[in-house]
Length: 620
Image (cartoon, rainbow, N blue to C red; front, side, top):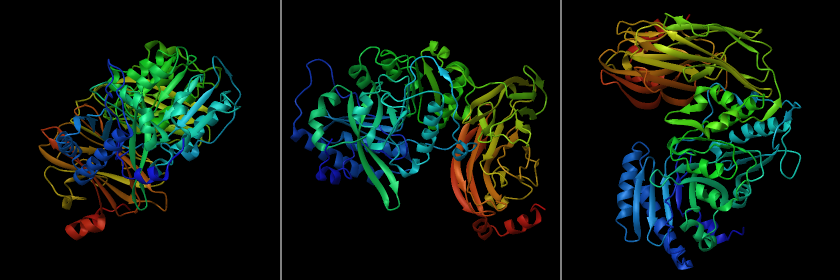
C-alpha cells in the first residue's frame, strides 16, 4: 500500500490505539447491526483524527506508570466529557473509546515479552533431521513485534522454530522452507492469506475487550490515513481497526500506527475448510479470552483449525512456549502430551494461562517417526511417594543430553535451570508444598523437547510463605534476603535478616541453600508468618568474573495461594546491585510490590552499620 509523506508525519501524533508496554490494544465492537454500514467521509476521518490527537495529549499528560488503574479511570472520565465521544469504558488495563461517528480507539497498558531465566536462546543451535509427517506439511510464522527494540530476541527464537519445522519436513506454500514474515510483511493481506497452512504461529500484540468479547491482533501494516474511508466498513462491522504502538528507542518514544484485525475478520474473510486440520498457535495476549468467550478460537475452528492455542490474559512468554510445544510435538507426541509437559513458567504467567480448543485437540499430532523420548530418569522422588521434609533433593539422570539443550526443573509450575554433571546426573534441592506436588525435569533443544513428570505428596505443616530466587548465569552468586517484621533496610545482613549467614533467624524464616555458583534456586519459607511487614530483597553478591548480566526472577506465594512473579530483573554490578522486590505483610497476607533498585554503597551511606555487618558476615 502507498504511504503518503503527510501520514508519516501524522503517524507520530495519531494515537488511535496506544500500547505503552508490550502487548497492544483492543477496541470496541465497532457498531454493526441492522441498517448496514453508514457513510463515512474524508471529513469524518479527519474529525476522528483530531479527536484522537486531543485525547492522546490528555492521556500522555495524566498517565502515571505507578498508578495505571487510576490513570485509566481519570482518562476515561475526560473522554466521556467530550461531545464527540459516545462512550469510554475501562476494562482491565485498557480504555475503549467509541466516537459518535462510528470510529473506535483504545489506550492499553500491557506487559512486554520476557525471556525466561532458565533459557538461553543462543544455545538453541540448528540440527537437521529427517522425519515423516501426517497431514499438511506447510508452515508459516508471523512476527509483527520485530520493529520494537525491546523484542529483538523474538526473531531468533522464531528462526529456531522455522529451522526445526524445516528439519522435520515442513515447507512453505510457495517454496521449500517454512514461510517467515516479519514487521511490515505481516500486513493485512498476510493475515488474509493464512489458509492452506498445516501450522500457523503468530507472535504479535493483542488484547480482548471483555465487554464485547472482541479479540484483536495487531498486524505489521502501517496504517495510512487515506485508507480510513475504504476500511471503514470493516471497522464499523468489528473486523478491523487501527492502533498506535509506543516503542522505545535511544531518543525517546516512537509512535508506530498499524492496522488490527479481529476474530470477526477471520470469521467473515475465510471460507469453510480454509485451514487444513491446522495447528494454530496465537502468541498474542488474551488470544483465548478468559477461557470462556473464546471468539477467535471458535472462529478459526469453524474454518477448519484442528487445534487452537492461546493465552487467557496478558503474558510475555509465548515465543518460548511455541518453541517448546513445536519441538515436543515434532518428537512423535500429540498435543495433549506436549501441553501437559510444558514448563509451568511457560504455561502460566501471573493470571495468564495457555489453553487449547477444542478438547479433542489433545490427539492432534505433527509427526509419525521422530526422536526417542526415554532419555530422562528421576530416581527420587518416585511416582506416588510421600515425603516428610520441606526441602527435597530431586535426583536422576538425562542420558546423552544434546550439547545445545536448555535443561530445567519445574516444581509446581515454577521452573529454574537444572544443573548436571558431565554424565547428565543431577541432584537439585527444591522447596515443596504441603499436600500434592508435581516435579518436572526436562529440556529444550534442536533435537526436540523431553520431559519427565513425577507426582508425590508432602506430609509437612502448611506453609505461610514460599519464595523462590532463580537467575540465568553460571558461576555467579546471587543472594536472597528476608528482613524480620517492621524493619528498614538498615537491618540488612544482621541477626534479623534471613540470608546466607543467618539461615534460620528467630522470627521464623528459613533459607534452604546458599547457591554460590549459579542459577539457584534459593528458597526462603515460613511455616507461620510473624506479625508485621517483611522486606524481601536480592543482593548480587559476586559475579566471580562473569561479565554477562544476571537475569533474575523472584516468585512469592502465601498460604499455597497463586504464585506472584517479579522480574526478570537484570543485575549488572557485582557486589553492588540490590533489588528490593516486595513487602510481605502478616497476618494480612498481603504482598505489596516495591521493585526498586539500589546499591550497597547507597545503603551504607544511609545506614553506616551495614558496612560493619557486611565485613563481619562476608563469605570466606
